[in-house]
Image 1 (cartoon, one colour):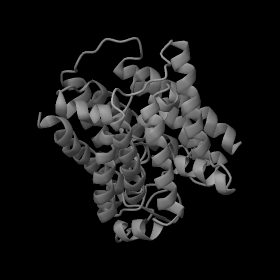
Image 2 (image 1 turned 90 degrees about the vertical axis):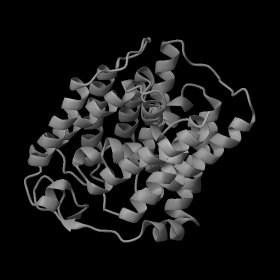
Image 3 (image 1 turned 30 degrees about the horizontal axis):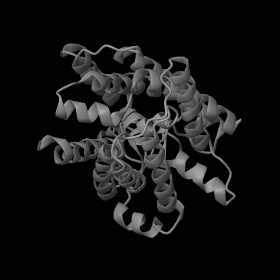
Length: 333
């Protein structure tokens, strides 16, 4: 059931990503480069909805929140490196993954080196370096049945010693004020609009958190980096875990969606040198996500709704790293 539910979750996620063109790199980059907040609004609405959904599910006993450990040094260094990698690779963890299913050959190149360096960082020769760069790791005792038992990463609720619902409602209200109280950039296209994308992505995130917590050993939601590492680890005899199955499902779902919409096409860049750029980007993605303790899906999309300090800090530096590399490659022109 672990592999099956991972693949099913991934297929649905891949369809949503492909039809919604949901890529965190594009969302963050467009905000800086074009003042275009269309995809950024989708991300913010999804986080607002997930914040309420995850806390409700945890209160109902369907899941337990499991915020990632706080590693300020690793969250900052890894966040910057991952942010650089998003721009160089032409996509975030989820963006690169779903574009593999669309036939984009640069995404294939980025994904291969993303997976290789994620595996080397988690289980191979880079592991000691990653551990060193992560620096001190902080955990606290859970102060609510909302969280898994034992030690967890600190959250806004544990820092202020309040019910998890108090910061959850405040953060959600602020996000919804931004989403619906500010002007939204307009786009035309065949896929899902931004708010439909956010709603469907939230439903997938809820299903993914429940199935992963129920059928695997780790009580957590969606992720990408560990999935690529799991896929590459199977080459050495390791079993495919839920997250690895989810990544395969994303590729399958994106392929099905692209074929149905007649958008599947083998795409190659005009310049062969682009392959070198995305290769470096893939290396940065795998290394940065490992140092930071998660990628844009594990931290930004799954950890921030849990109000984990680690995920909030990493997300800030994902954005800053992206904007720095965006300026270096495009802004100076």
